[in-house]
Image (cartoon, rainbow, N blue to C red; front, side, top):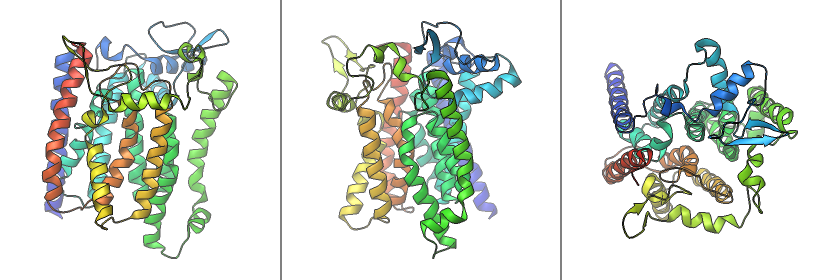
Amino acid sequence: MLENRKNRTRDYWIVFGVLVAVYGLICIMTGMYPWSDRANVYNSYSLQARAWREGRLDLGQDYSYLELAIYGGKYFVSFPPFPSFIFYFLGWIFGEISLDSFVALASTTICAVYVMKILYKLGREHVPFWTLYLMVGSNLVFVSVNGWVWFIAQNLCFTLSIMAIYYAMEAEGGTSLFCWACSVGCRPFQVVYFPLLVWIIYEKHKEECPNDTIFTLVKKRWYWAFPTLAVAMVYMWLNYVRFGNIMEFGHNYLPEFTESELGQFHISYITTNWWSLVRLAEYNGESFSYCKFNGMAIWISMPIFLSYVWYLIYYIRKGKCKDYGLVALQVGLMILHGLLILSHKTLGGWQFGNRYFIDLLPFAFYTFLKVTPAKGDRLYNYQRYLFIFGGIVNLLGTIVTYNEWV
């Protein structure tokens, strides 16, 4: 037991040491220090939280550098509201200090802890490697280095999704679904993963009560729904009092969508966005363009997806898949989630990689861990090359993009 505790302490030091080194290098190379103006300039959520503390739902004025919803002659934050809840309470404690990037880094740290807890729970070897593969070897690096409005919501969503998975594995349904509801308030399409969380909770519950059906679980634990329903009611109330629609958080009132012929979502966008999802960097005869608008090849910025698809196919073909039901559900939900993203008018206006698809990673990572062997070095030996590739690509891509060198 003591040796196990020492090993885990060592693992935490390794992970946090690497994270400090990676984010420290990015800050040095880009000037994106968490206390700097640049790291906190696109602070829509902080501005919204301040307006709430002043008793106002709109921002009171236009901020030309932010994406704001214009409705009834007033200016509103056009993104789902959950991050502002954090800044609302922090504002009462710390005043009007810019905390956006500090919250972003805190979220990354918490995420690393919960990823490791999931890995320990599943009995995985090489815990620091798998943690860093997900967090440093993927596009998550780009969106978690600062508190910009477009990125901090994805950062918090990722962390909350990981937390939801962990608590589902512990059969703490109320906490899991609460974290999931908070993640939906960052990125609404996370709503599709509700069935998967219920599946994980139920599978854990059956270890103690093997004769219980899903309906028995609901009957016994109906009160788990209360925190989630409370969060949903707050979202709907905010949407209604601001835009007269419980399902509208403001994005449809951005000028780019109100002036669009087909609106924010349309099936015809899928074809164009699909090519943006897989395309390489473009060469114009003199230099490379990293496709900041609508992104570039997901398999370059997030090679862990390559691993997921490869090993999923491999273990199914070999008849070694541990849980076909879980895999079928997760793949179906991931396809649905991907199609919803692709049907959006854009895949993001300023980025390295293809950041919208970061939202798929937490649940894909969990299923990847469930499908592949927990022990043995063969998987690790193959994956470490993809980790090195993904880590270098995302570190360089993040530095290059924020410095606008291409």
